[in-house]
Image (cartoon, rainbow, N blue to C red; front, side, top):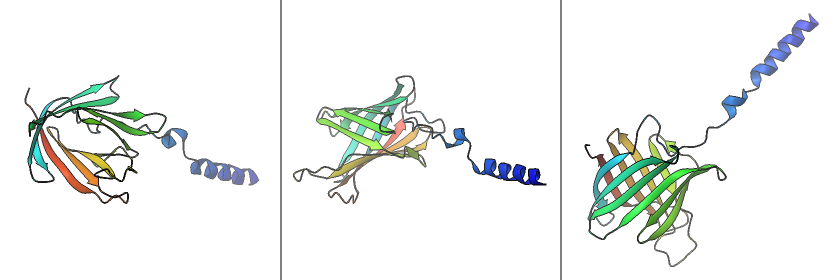
Amino acid sequence: MQSIRRLFALLCCVALVPSAPAQQNKPLSAIPPEGFRFTGTWDCAGTFRNAQVHKATFTGAIILADKWLELTEQDVEPATGYVAKYLIGYDVQQKRLVEFDANNFGAATYASDDGWQNHVLTMTSPVSEDTKASYAANRFLYSVKGQDTFLVDWQISKTGALNWVQADHLTCQRRPS
C-alpha cells in the first residue's frame, strides 16, 4: 500500500512539472504567421495627418536565411523624393524584434517585445528626451488584411506618457505579377 502511495505521489509530481520543450519560447519572427508574404511590389495609397494624399510604392523581400524582412518604400505623391529601407528581424541578445529605418532624411530604430499579435506587428521607437523634438516617440503598425493587402500606420506621441495620434496611413495592394 505504501508503494502505491509513493507511485501516486510521484505521478502527481510528474504531471505538475511542465515539459521543457513546451516551456521554451520560440524566438519572435519578423515573418508574419499564417503564410502571408511581403515579397513583391505593392502600390500604397492613403493620407497624412493633415489629410494630404500620400501614395507610395513598397517592395518586400525575405532575406538572410529567411530570418529578416526587408521593405523598401518610395514615395510617389507628394513627390518629395523620400526613399527608405526598413529591415525587421530578431535580435537574439535583446530577445525582441528590431527595425532599422534608413532613409534619405535620417534614420531611426524601433522594437517590439510582442511580435505579431492578431495580424498586427507594432514597432515602437524609444522615448526621446529631446524637448525640441516634434514628438517624444513614434511607432509603426503593420497590419495584414489578406494575402494581397496590408496597412502601414505611423503614429506619434507628443509626450513620454505615450498618447498615440495617427500621423500617416497607407493601404497597400499587391501589384499583379
